[in-house]
Length: 346
Image (cartoon, rainbow, N blue to C red; front, side, top):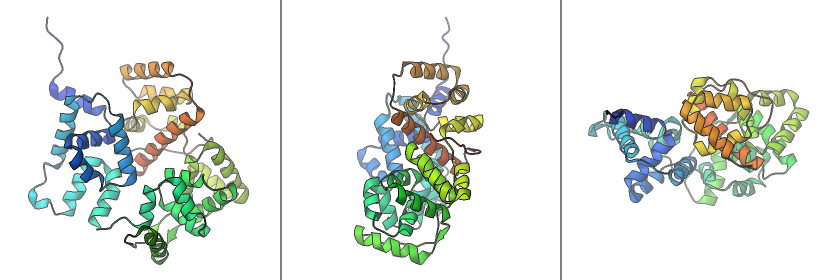
């Protein structure tokens, strides 16, 4: 009796399709060995290291075909380059983008090609949120707003949670009103931080802050704090509060994302994280996810959801916010369209 076998090449592609870009990067680094992987990681930013490191720690039962596929994919991505291109900007940009994806490669490319070391502000990205809050606690509110605007929304949200209600409101209002920071002011702030970190300062004009940044931060703080903060913003400036609310995107809004966008998002989200997030999701959102998976994968996900015991609301919210962070990253990279905002808070 003939056995129904799948061509090795097709099987390998299917196995790779189940891996996100971060997981592929993790497998590639793990295949290089500790020393070489460490050399690469030390050139990456804190968020990149965290994502790849977490993926390394959670990867289980990686098949030999997947390892071979990831390595071959990487080699194919750079095979068009020659030794003559090793010193060129184009080669570096293409290689890192192919290996890590647009989002993660962006900051690393700038750091390499611009020859810049980690600035005072960039150093904050490596610190615990509470440490950053303590560091800027006694600075002028405008300095606090610049720092909050400069950092990633998820870290900024955690930092903001360490301030009392009145200070949070003042900072987020300033963030929403901020448009650009003069090079001299940014340099001065970098100098202050560099003296504390004993590094080198760089200077460049920065456009930062604005209503969209404020919305992203408010969206990621603890739900109770976010609700109160949004109400306070509206009481202080109703128009600004409305604009922030209109730009906010919550987990239930995923139902409005097109199928192609949902599929792109699911490629970046681990099953374990998705199960936790869907525990507290609206039925319409769950069905939207199931619809954009293969029949077998959807059945397995349903089974995992049913088997999952009761969970703390904070754990569910945390998983949902992590997925929202990934969704915003993909939206910023132009890979998906999030559409309009929502009125509810996660």
